[in-house]
Image (spheres, rainbow, N blue to C red):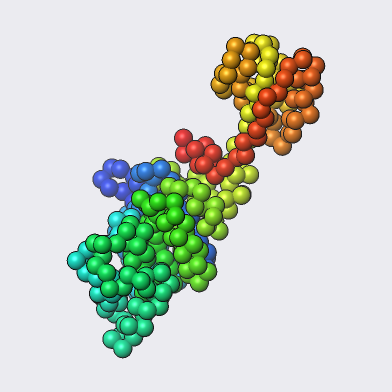
Amino acid sequence: MIEIKNLTKKFGSSVILDNINFSVKKGEILGFLGPNGAGKTTTMKIITSFWAPTGGKVEIDGLDVVRDSIKTRSKIGYLPENVPLYDDMKVFEYLKFAAEIRGIKKENVKKKIKEASEACGLSKVMRKPIDELSKGYRQRVGLAQAIIHNPDVLILDEPTTGLDPNQIVEIRDLIKKIGKEKTVIFSTHILGEVSAVCDRVIIINNGRIVGEGSPDDLIKKAGVREIIYVKIKGSKNDVLNKLNEMENVLKAEIKDKESEDIYGYEIEPKQGVDLREYLSMTVMKNNWSILEFNKKSVSLEDVFRELTK
């Protein structure tokens, strides 16, 4: 559905996108991640024909977004980071306006408004002025305008920015529902959303793709190791030395202190090694006491930090 080939964007001497390549299949939700300034919004603005690329090309369903700009725009619904709402309009008026500028036939406008408002949970606020809506409902209105013409592709730039946890869950569920039928590119800084919503993830940094795959695949491929936290009662120096001498331990270090003889330690094991047996044997042999034990699972946040640091 979306093909991005050797995409480059420069502003003067600054290279914002550096020859990136990726594709998105029909019915796929792609999480597009990266730190501020990485090139996410630039990529989205090129896909939606707001900006022209310096080099390379973007195709939507086989159509070039520069050469066939009008046709490709008709296939896209776009929710920018700052939702383009008119506060003096009521929700119904705004969606009617969005339908009309999208070229929906007059006899179909009310039907399309009804479908979009129901999909986005707006039925209760249709006659309310937009400036009276909560941030969550404003995002819903923005999403409704993006889908009102039933596009094949949805481009969502930070759709949950500024929302409270309940609102985030609502918008997340809505995106998952919509994504069953459409191709979605979804950028966010909330990495928990990506694991919950996205089929595949692309991580971009300094205008280049540094990671690609499902959330689970990225965690496996990134080489970020799990960390064990253990709180031990015993002589600090002895404990630290013995932990670092343990078989299959790459590194052990002091994390925190509870008292003069109780410290918390972080231990990094070799890949795929279960340290519990080694650790319990070392503790018993040295007459220490384990007061706390936790295994920190590797998360997408760990992978993100590793790939973009």
